[in-house]
Length: 426
Image 1 (cartoon, rainbow, N blue to C red):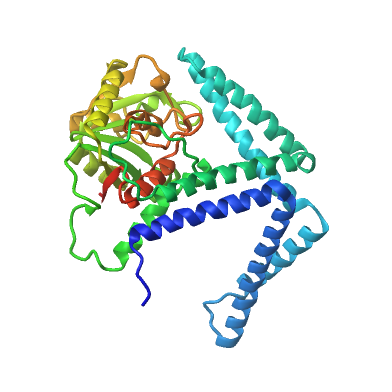
Image 2 (cartoon, rainbow, N blue to C red):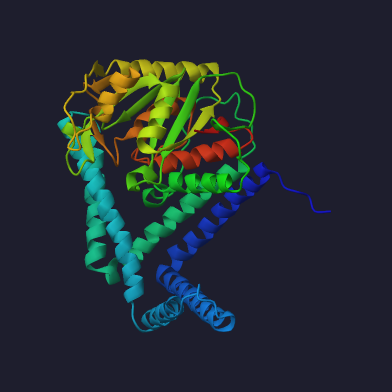
């Protein structure tokens, strides 16, 4: 008789398998990145060819108009073109290398802007971001301009990254069911998915939840959906990950902290201070009661919120409260103006204060004085608080996307003795 695996065991094996595959692929790319890329492109071409021929045969045999001839012809053409280019030129490989270089250039821009904000706000540590900007910018620019000569170095970097990512996941799989109680507070280094991929994890979780609703198992249900892994003494700390399918920024998501019934949120809530296409603005923090805030989020932005309740020891709880007190010392009250937006509506901050009674603040100093969507963002502030509980989300330079956070929280919920004991969908 085949033993049925538990959900926890499936999650553990999935984590281990991902880690092993990442290490294998990383080693292959490290040793021969060009050859591995050409082989991968050949597999992609075969997939396109099989899909195109299969669709063509189904249309011919079944006479089904729902299967398009144009779809089949396009996939067959794409397959043959990719095989031809992959065999007779280095263009496909060079395009992959250019994409890697472009990603580094994008990272360099983010680091450069972060350095500028640190200097403008007189925050220590900005020179590290300048170094990262120059290093990534130099390598990325050289790669984009000369993909043939610098491609091997990019594959070495990619291979090393995949090996580290794999080792991180293998460690997570091995420690999956280990009891964390009694451990000292510590920050474990953890390799996360690239931000460009992690950014859309909240949207993926929303899609999975919507598929669950469509199965009909939720008929007649009202209120939040709650999964409890184990009953815990209430410590009143919950991480809220927002997402929606209404637009790109909604899909990428947002992160709040809820402590003792109060939501603590950080973002660019002063639209009249925004610049650089709305990616930079004054950092605003507000505190508001949880229930009316969640209702406003669902009504105002059509958001779905994923809540992750954490198991905290008394020592961890005290560390979180100490960090919150430190943040309070950096704040000054802010009264949002009654000035209307271009569409004639009051600002979101104005609604929070006068509809929900929220308390709004701006930072007098620290890296959070200026909000930047790609570095000093909601995730970084949340991590500076929740990190007191020993989470392992922090990136090398503190750049975290909501998806990076949610990916880690899902792992902690699936792990039998992880930090997260309850997951709630609002």
